[in-house]
Amino acid sequence: MRKLYLLPLAAILFNTAGAQCTNGRYWDEIFPAVNKTTVTYSTVYGQQMDIYQPAGDTLSARPLIILAHGGSFISGDRTDDTTILNLCQRFAQRGYVTVSIDYRIMDAASFLSNADSAIDEVAMAISDGKAAIRFFMNDRATTNTYKIDTGNIYAGGNSAGAVLYMHVGYIDSLGACPPGIAAAIASNGGFEGNSGFPGYTTKLNAVINLAGALNETSFVHTGSRPSVNAQGTADATVPYNCGNPLGGFGALSTITLCGLGALEPVYVSSSVYHMSHIFPGDGHVPWSTDPVKFNTVDSMIKVFLFNFVCPGVVYTEVKGASFVPELSISPNPAVNEVNINSSEPMRDISIIDQTGRVIYSLTGLNSENYQVNTADFIRGVYFLKVLFRNELVAPVVKQIVVE
Image (cartoon, rainbow, N blue to C red):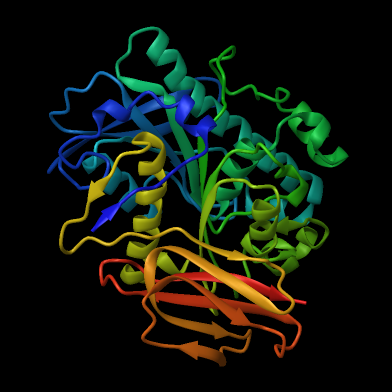
């Protein structure tokens, strides 16, 4: 099965690595071994990162993925988030340079007892996350130890780490921030932070968002960076829609985060290139304990990044692999009907309400396009699940709003 994924022209223009896409690189795990190096990337605050490189790689310019661990900004480090460690290992074996970073965290009592302290902590983490990007920009301009293609830098994380890099990727200026967040960022070195290697850009090609969120959906707008996203709809740690993190415990009752349920329609209405996978009924980071769900997330990120690193390249699938296709639904919100368009022939379609009840199902389809009549649906939020004719294609779940 051949796949062709297309990106907007702007995404292709900043790509410089397309010529490297040979022999399964960036898709298959073609490097059997990975070398890991620990370095201090912020000499200001002593933060470290683990850098994973494909052993024996001879390319002189490689795409970079920087990932940050979860832990609610009060716990965790670069070595203990299995989702981050597994992604670093797999993508390094595919030919990327991957990184797991530490960032400053706060003691739980201070974080949970004072909203200003909590916002200040996130601002410090954002400052560290930006310094991690600049570390590699500086390296490329000086010793070139890690041989990074600085036109192909991606960053994200799991849970709190995703919250960190979502704000790095989507806040364009202090003026775009609410006063409290703007003040916290200003007091921690300003927009670019004060964690080291000043003077280099921290712009990302795209964001990897695993159960992360933004303080305001307005940070996303036409022209924003692309993203790849996953979240469970019953997430009580990072709200799937807009709400308080950690269930609003303590001072967090005054802080708002907006997860994938709120961001997905903004991505669509703003024409922001993205891929998303919704896990109906699942809580926080279900892929951290379920290998099948981890493989779904890993496959989606693989396809998403391949689109950037190898734009316009047609790749022939190998048996045993799986990939996530392009699937769009419109209009969304829907009134009388919703149109489903897929890059792969669909086999089964089901629509599930928020209680988990299947209210519509169709089997035996063999088409890339289908229309569902929603005129008799009760107004609300539903989940569309699609299975495909090709057994190597991962199922896709998307949210539909019926008005």
